[in-house]
Image (cartoon, rainbow, N blue to C red):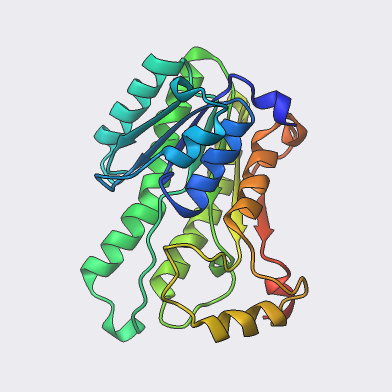
Length: 253
């Protein structure tokens, strides 16, 4: 599978830490040209560069606010100038906020939906327009969540945003398949990252891992492997699907 990615161009939103960084690492290791964007002004890309076989010229990173289509369009333009046409888009930008539903503010709602859902639609639309115009296919992989199906207490708006990602994936897959564009999603279970590090104590994480059929929490690399599969030639007849990578969470929760 990895030979398939040599010289492919991959764009990743929210690619500066956690799952996004792991996905970028894996694609870079497989020989792809990798571009990531993030909101942080001082993010580091050393781990990606180290795994790119010393080919620093095959890695780029930009600051971009994914809630602003103009900034995303600039990111895509810069990636194309440096590497050529993008082949794979991974929409991964996301935020997580906990609040009882009676206390959710309009700002909470707007920020969660803007980053977790709106940005996925308009970033995908930007890429699909380019691919349609150039008559080339492409693959889009969205990061959903088990919380698209499993309600997390005090995280209802997050759950709503990720359920939206699932339906967005299906709608765009149905609409854009005619242009050779595949759209799928990966739905991670509980993956320890900086996004959720405050959710559980060490003891709670241990209890959670013991409750899962596979008896362990997942890693960002587990999700990266699933993203790469859906982006690869081995998934060329797969579109509109959601791949749950949850260690069996939905079987027992």
